[in-house]
Image 1: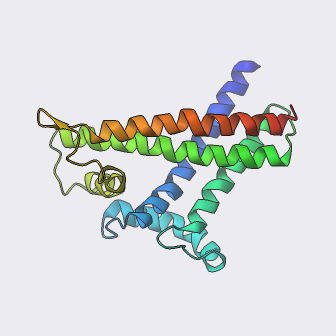
Image 2: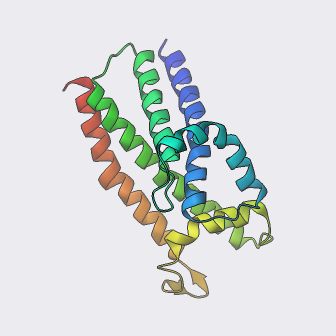
Length: 191
């Protein structure tokens, strides 16, 4: 029975992660002013717009941050936690669920950036065509994080700024997100 629960948990995490990735992409693309003419940007926009358009009427953007997309990602993480707890037959406290879902959003965005920076670094290492849609979108998304360090961590012709940013993001996951998730789990389970 435990194997079935693990398999279902994996599939639930995968499904909610895929949905959240679309909305995080939309959030980050708008925040970084990614090229809208990119086919990937258009796909993300067309896919997320039916859900975000009504929500944006109530929650407009704040500066370049799409509050509606952020709320949808948070609601997806909240619903994922509810489904996972229900799968285990647990009924958590609401405050714990809210804190856990906030930790999940922060963790998802940090890990999303780690993976994105790694992929972008590999693509730039192998001299992928600079006009490739994936390379252009990834470059515009990681540029705001890399810009402060660009050119400052160069050794032997290699720029170590992507690695420094990935290390900082992993430290954020360890030092900020994990304690927040632990607090949320304790609150959710009433410990």
